[in-house]
Length: 323
Image (tube, rainbow, N blue to C red; front, side, top):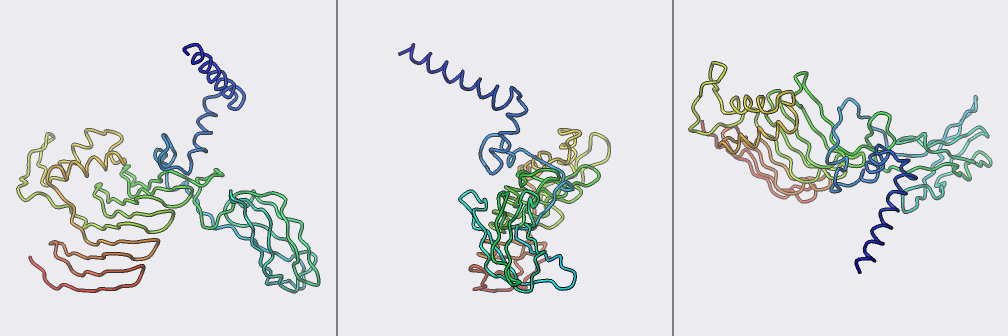
């Protein structure tokens, strides 16, 4: 039994080594690139781009959904009205093209092309016209079709998976937006210049889906908080200023990063602080669905609505305010 195990282990090791030498050309960097591509649409695989990759928001580009566009190069008249849609295979590649509207008035100089995401990866043709109408359209080269706008990092072919960050000149994050396969997916968080969270919005595959929370700009210190002396002179007049000072010491040049922000929020709450909710929303597939509530700066409700898939079913306003 032990001998069989050793033989099997040897075979597996040999296969792995062979794959490494042939498929990955013996380069660790190629393995890394392959894994990033393989795990690009996963939210859970170890070291998937969605979980670990972070880029500058200025490097993000958004491209429209794919569609087929006809163009007539004739000088004196041009056709119009032709519409064609692709028939896709299970993996989203063009299997054939169906002309759903032939249009009219086209010359023999009409051409068709795919526009939108990765448009340069597609090549259409031949195109057949008869009596000014488009009769048939084929394709010579296909790529994965996108039914919705997708976001890409400049110079990359695959839709972006990961998080993009917008920052103040100080390095403090303004907003972090997670993407999965080119669509906003996960929790979008925005901060002010002091690292105080302003809102948190949940998305699923590009749609508002989940809880959206908006906070007032000033966090709420514990009632028993008393200003304390700062090691560098002066006083910490608020608990947030103290937590912010501790974070700057702890994170150094990474102060203002997502880890720093997360640590400050958790530390502040564990120390008795809180963030006052201004607006609470619930969404399902881009439709208002569930409870919507507004609050004043003292924590009093200003309104309470209930929605069912975009339709408001209950509404109530509150006038009570305490000072």
